[in-house]
Image 1: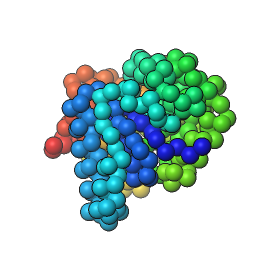
Image 2: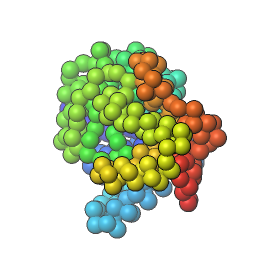
Image 3: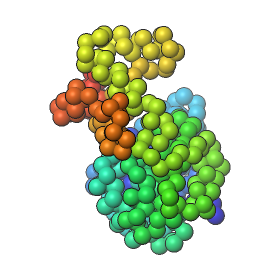
Image 4: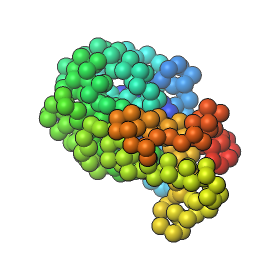
Length: 286
């Protein structure tokens, strides 16, 4: 069954990007935020991204208009009732996600509807257990910026049905034109299991005074050919998100390399979250 109606919970950087990807692919999208004001802001974020795509010649003016018409922002979870797929992209907080999966699992009308999480680290099996539809719950991890990045991690849990995984693989490849890779339901999945220890190592290096943030980043950009240095990338992802992923991975595996360093904890406590807050390892203008 082709997925034509989908919903996104959360209109932040990732949620708005996922909504944009689906709207550009021709799907009807309900975008749910915590308030009407936040939903309106999410739509504005998407429109800004679409206008940049138009300026770069990636889409036409008609494409932009059509995509925006397919996006329906709201603060009402009940608007998700008729969706064939719902992707949760709320903050990386386990209790928040558990509460959402409990509520949305009861809201969906279609017994075959899929409820997926864009989590970076929280066990999918826990989300499935509270949803009342464990066979139709799995992880679908997009990467930032979602309209540009081609990779999507698909994460079935022990209780996800093979049919659900097949439908999601078809949705990612045929509807969205992206490349899926399969990961097991373990904290960090594939990409973050490799990436987060690297980012935390760079933060420890900066914390210990080995080098400046600029020199650490330039070392990896010019010395290793990375498109962005680890501290700038941490700012882009969000230092609170890096902290949450590290804590989740450390909780599961007890490996010291996953444990967030004290400097990261202090920066998050201070509200220095990176680009989204205007300051992290680097300052950012609004």
